[in-house]
Structure formats: structure tokens, C-alpha cells
Length: 306
Image (tube, rainbow, N blue to C red):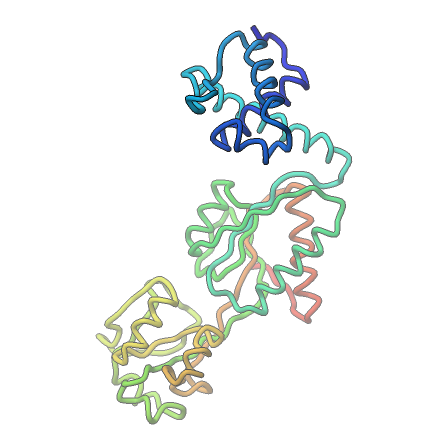
């Protein structure tokens, strides 16, 4: 019966899992790069040390015993822990160690996604052994994940403020009002007046847009959505007018499916923020915040709180 675990036992368990994953001793030869007789001997040694049979193998094919099936899960769990501890031990001498969870909203301008990539590149140049994880969610979900500790840094458009979170402005996104092909205003789009555009139906966001300074008459908003993709569906139908990020709408404009109503008059800008929990950050989070701010300042932006 196995009472202590040696390096030999760990190697034998890896052989066992390789055979299980391959579906038998014969197909495992390629994975393990050893002969069938060697693999069989290693399995026998492991079974002897454990004190019970793990699998049936031979002319009747490969089949796990009930104890073998249970050992598969135990072996995977053990080896995962061993590998994790080994990695952490190897990286102990590095300055930054851990996992960094980031949150982004969808369809951010490519130029600003590039800045986030640049921030990651700057961070990776540090003395670190950090794993990255990125979640793409709606702004409200990102705030919830920040509060619960599931993510440490979020970048996006946030229309309200949570008192326990810290907001730092990074850049602005330009939103322009459009109509779709087939809309009565489509052929005249470009220099439309306030009176012309407010006489038609609009698709609007389901959350507040304090930056959108456009007064519409009662009943003008006949469609609502909580994301730009859905708003675009309404506009492309040819029945609604609505605002979209300029970079998001550009491919549709180039295909002749959308036209701006009057980009000089019907537009607004929304600020994008970096959001974190208030208080002291871990060394990993603090370093990434520093790198993210650096790439934005590097292009002339002034970073402002709130």
C-alpha cells in the first residue's frame, strides 16, 4: 500500500494518465515514446505500490477497474497541485507573481485595444511570472466583478459611479447618429436639421446617456437596447435613427448600409475609464495600472480621476 509519494510514484502516475488518455497501452507508445513492454511494466509497478489493480489490459482490450476510475481523478488532482507548487517555487525569486484578471467591454476602438496590448507588453517586460485573464462583459457586470474580486482592473464606459470603486479617465469615444438604407432620410443624410431628425423614430440605449445632448419629442424613442450591436440592428432595419460609435459604424458606412445624419451636429463623446477597487492594490495590480497609464500618457492624454 502506498504510504508516501516519491518522484517515482509521480512519474508512474503520469504514465498511467497517459495510457488512460490514449485509450490503451499500444496507442500510448507514441505519446510516451517507449515500448509496450516498458509501459506495461511501469503500470504493474504502480499497481504493486498501490496494492490493487488499476486496469485490465491484454487481448481483451484496455479497461479501467472501479478503483482505476477513481484513481484517474485523484491522480489528476495530485499532479495539478504538484505542478502548480513547482511553478510557484521556480518563480519565487521573481518580483511579481500571481494572476491578473482584466475586464473589458466589447467593440472598443482598435486603437485603444492596441494600447491595452501595449500595456501588457510593458508589463511582461518586468521581472514577473503573472498569468493574465480577460473577461469581456457589459459595464454593469464589470463593476459587479470588481466588487466581488473576480477582476482587478476594468476598462470601459461607465455611466454611473459606485462609491467603493475608483474611476480614472483614459480616452473618449465619438458617437454619431445614423440612419439605415431604406430610411426616408437616407438619400438626404449628411446635412439634416434638428427638425428633420426629431420627426422620426429613434433607437436608444436602455441606460442613461448624459453626454447625448439631443432633445427628442415624447414617443420618438420606440426601441431600446443595452448594447451597440442591438442598436445597430434597429438602425439597419431602415425604421429607426440612432447613435453608434463611429469606428463601429464605419464598415457599414463603407458598404452603403448606413449614413451619418449630420456628423457635425448630431454627435457626442463618451469617456472611457479604468476602474479599480479603492484602497491599496497588490503589487501585480499596481504595476499593471502604472503600465496602462503610461501608454495613454505616452500619446498625449491627460489622465483624470472620476
